[in-house]
Length: 87
Picture 1 (spheres, rainbow, N blue to C red):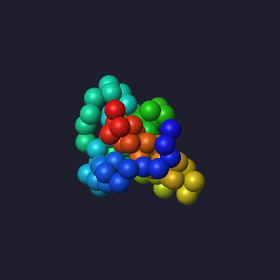
Picture 2: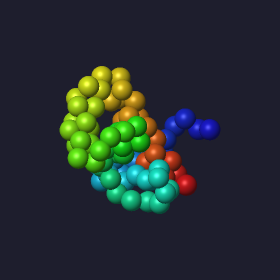
Picture 3: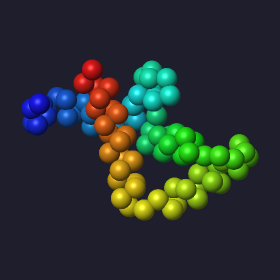
């Protein structure tokens, strides 16, 4: 695999990040979500509780992410966008 990314592919990926385009991993259909929506999906996958408590739990969950976890989620989000753009 060529490690050098073509400028056009890089620009597409950057624009996708800015526009919040990603593949929804629940049903694999394209949709637009921003990074915060992506984090909400990640939180929802591990959440056990009532719908009433979910927003507060999400706020606590995000506030308690350490820097490395946030970087990891950002990389996963970018990889999903990249994978979708290079199909």
